Amino acid sequence: MSSAHITFDTTGDKIARRVRKMRPSAVRNLFAAATRDDVISLSGGMPAVSLLPEEDIRRATLAAIESPEARAVSLQYGPTDGLAGLRAVLADMMRDLGIRVKADQVLVTTGAQQALTLIAEAFIDPDDIIITEGPTYLGALQAFSAFEPDVRAIPFDEDGMRMDLLEEELKRIGKDNPRLKFCYTIPNFQNPGGVTMTAERRRRLLELAREYNFMVVEDDPYGRLRYDGGHQVPLKAMDDSVIYLGTISKMLGPGLRTGWIAAPEAVLARINLVKQGADLCGSAFDQLVVQHYFADVAWQRTLQKFIALYKERRDAMLAALDESFPPEATWTHPAGGMFLWITLPDYMDTDSMLAEALESGVTYVPGNSFFPDGKTGRNSMRVNFSFETPESITEAIRRLAKVIEERLELYRVFIEAGALPGYDRKDAAMDENATSWKDVIVDSEQNEEAVMQAREGDAEQIEIAEEKVTEAQEAAAE
Image 1 (cartoon, rainbow, N blue to C red):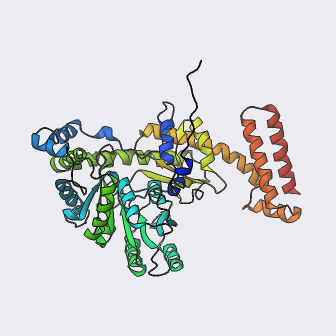
Image 2: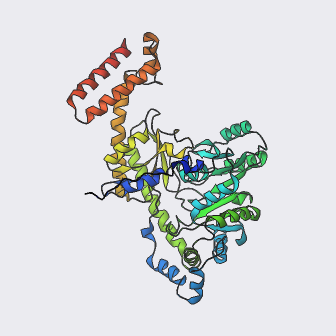
Image 3: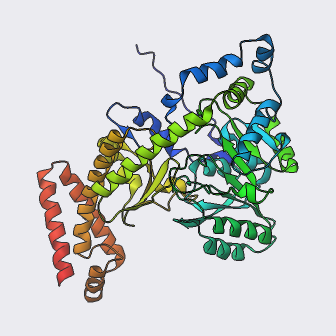
């Protein structure tokens, strides 16, 4: 007799309302698939930690445990705001970027992801208004969504968040609106877009923040990973009231869960209260290793190795896109960071296409994951170039281009037949036949389904697909 048994979740009616509304991370969901030997992953944002010098890591780790005094710190509870020595080191590191803060204006977090959650808990009430770039970092959307805000996503272009569109949105919100809490931005090599906000737009954002009375949260995980052009002054260096988030994940390793918040002391006092309830204190061991790494070893040399490697991989991806992708696709050209953003025609759906990509041995993150409504951006995708080798990146883009081209072949037939809304050929057919767009879309979906079945090798469906496409073409020509 089998010992297997069925269990049922009886907690459904006990779950908090805010948790019911939370969406899982698309990147987390892709991790299992990305570990398959036959899959090349362009989905995660993993740094190439294999470049880290073994001796440097060993020195920093041993320094955290080799003496009784060190062990008394690294293996014990620590202060909620982080070890004083690490906060001083982080303050020194920020001076390289033009940010002038004291150690007591820095609070250490368990990665920058925790920093986002702490800020959300400290400042967001249900229905408060939060402004982000659209698209924006999906981890931030997850952190914010638990507190049920009204997130307003402002589009970007190659120069970062569109200030004209932000100002239009702010006018709708109104000045001194108590519901408007903060603008969350990634100004350097934005995730997922890869774009960088210009100095002019940074100044304008700070002007609008003062005019409309909202805080600015600057997330800067990639700022030191610049491959082209000159340094952009951080928002925090331009205005001390900015809440700045940093992380060692891209300079050392995400396994040492260490990030930080640099903010005015009154702001940090509120966040410190929230953090006491979240984890009491972070890992003192991780913090002491990080402190010794950035204080005692030549970490800048390793950072330059990261930059050289990632630049090579970015160039390989851009070259592969130029060579393999169809003319209907466009993409950003990041000057640094780890990601670029690909946009396909608006009738494409990268969410539904992901299964085909996985079958072809490549992953990406569908664009709708980076928008608060989970629907916008379905014709886009984020791809990462920091982790795979140039050869693997080239092959992954080739595989992805093949998947996209197969879908485009289908849609090109519909466009030629006038069976897709938004294209000139269909306008004439609509005027003459007075067919409703709803009927046209239904017909298109039926045609697509038939063609997709045909690709699976069903001879009967091949014949049906060809007949339906021919009928659509004849109807458009009449």
